[in-house]
Image (cartoon, rainbow, N blue to C red; front, side):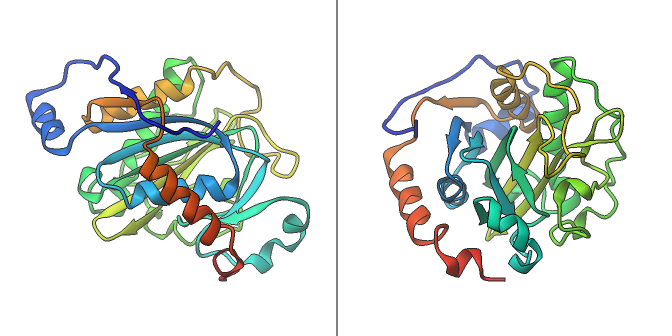
Length: 267
């Protein structure tokens, strides 16, 4: 069900340093939306709405039906076969194509200053939070790479068409080398939209993407929100329903932009 109406709650948070507490008071809470499955147009429209909305927003969601998403810079002609068999959409963020099937998508929208203006450093908080959440569930991962993240500045334009065939140094890998989490960004003015994709199990079209064995993940969205809140030093505020003005704006964008060929076939 699409979230609507009013309502929020504030989960208990852990103790932070005085520096983090002052920063949290200056920047406000991390607004959290733990969402369900939605259409491609609605998902992208709501994420763009959050990009244009003041504050820090974190959303975890799924897609229905299973959908192919293309990165902002990708050419539709490179995916002729896939587009005849799957619903598809163009994301506002860069990176490679992703098949959203057995997967959680993460969307983080906030001021650039909250992450750091250097692109390579701005990827770290989300990736660290995802690693922490998975490790808390006992999910094995390959050792973390260096924080220098060589090559991440060019990740907006991927070297291969498929995101999960193109691991970079910050991506999360399973112990056997399978890419399980990757991300991409879009910067607009003083704000950034950071998309992340956590593949829970492989799809037939992308057999090397995601975990080879399933694991219990029902508590994962809330755990992701908690670890990201701690990583950013922002107190969490869980929204039980999406505020009506945001819902109305997302509905409009879903119809007028993300369902339109002028957007999806622009390249």
